[in-house]
Image (cartoon, rainbow, N blue to C red):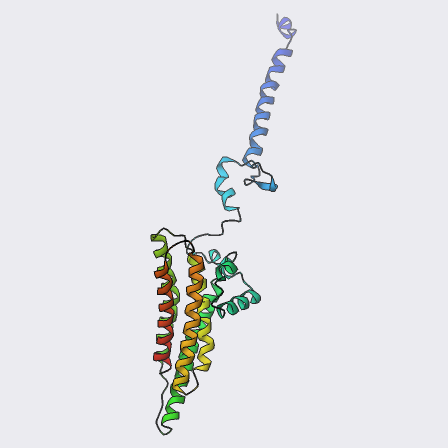
Length: 269
C-alpha cells in the first residue's frame, strides 16, 4: 500500500508549488523597481507629452522645475536671481538713468530686474551725503569765516541712512500696493529697480555740491532733481500706459524733487 502511494503521479503537486512561488517572485520583482523608479518631471526631454511620475514624489518633481526659484521669504537663495547681473549690465542701466526722456527703462530690465543697483547705489549715496555734506559745511564755513571752528557732524550718517533707505524702499512699496488696489498690474522688484537707479544722479551731484557757491549749488541740485524726477515719471507713464493714472505720475515727480531739495537743505546748507 505504501508503494502504491509512492507510485502516484506527483507532477501536479510538484508543479503547483513553483507556480505559486513564481507568481510571488514576479509580483515581488515587479513591485521592487516601482519603489526605486526614477521620476521624470512633466515635459522632460522636450516632448509635448508629460513624462511619468510616481504619486508619492509629485512634490519633488515640482521642486525640480527651474522656472520657480523662490524657496521662501527667509531663504537667501530666493534672492540670488535678483543679483545675477554683470558690470556691463549695471553700467548700461546707470547711463539709462541719466537719459530721463527715453522712458524705456522697464523694457531694458524686463527680462532681468535686479536689486543690486538699489542696494549699491543707496549705500553709496548714504556715505557720500554723510562725508561730502560735512566737507561742504567745512568749506562753506571756511569760505565765509576762516577763523571759525568746525566739528564733524555724526548725525549726517543717521539722517542719510534713514532718508535714502526709507525713500528707496517705502515709496516703490507704496506705489506697488496702490496700483494693486486700483486693479493695475505692478511688479515690486521692477519698481525697486527703477527707484534705485534713479538715485544714481545724486551720487554724481554730491561731488559738484562741494563747490562753496550757494547759487551754483541750487542750480546743480535742481537740475539733478529734475533729471531724476523725469526719469521716474516718464518710465512710470510708459509702464502704466493705457491707465489714466496721471496723478500718480505727477506725485512721483514731486516726490523726487522733494528728495532733491531735502538733500540740499539738510546736507549742503
